[in-house]
Length: 77
Length: 139
Image (tube, rainbow over the protein chains, first blue to last red):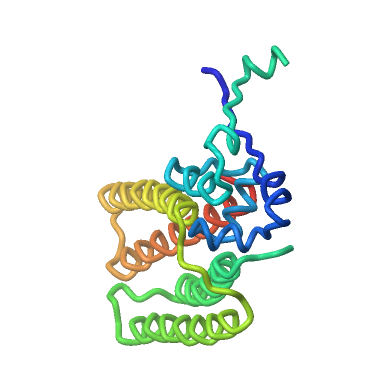
């Protein structure tokens, strides 16, 4: 089975969004700050629902926030 | 270590459960065991439950005033679901083991009831530990 991970650019997007805090993002998305911390640290892969809500906050497509990385693609990098 | 309200809540409940039920089971299994469930044993259990409720209310009042309370989100629910699964599997295994013991060697009603209670408490402890593990390690 191929091991996969979902990486994200939330930290960068927050920086470009007037240094939005994790708490502000959490409130806009409707999750706890701890969940935003976990997502940013690649410790939790959010549901599609939350992923789309995060993308909507930054007004970018989903692919600009999250990217899928499998063990195979990491090997080619 | 930066703990959320939910983690503080679980740590407090875990500590209270371990201390109060630890004391209860130490007195129950440490002393002479009656063959039947007597009024004194029921009284001890009621006292343990009462002490837990009081400590929990006081503790949660304190942490609620110092921490920001946020409603459960999908990650909290996912972690809780996994914790309940582990607790359920352990409880089921414990109960089958207990049923086997009753059939094979026989147990007094007093011992049976307290071993069942012990299974429930151990399952609760496993639930809390699973939650704390996933909150720290990630899920």
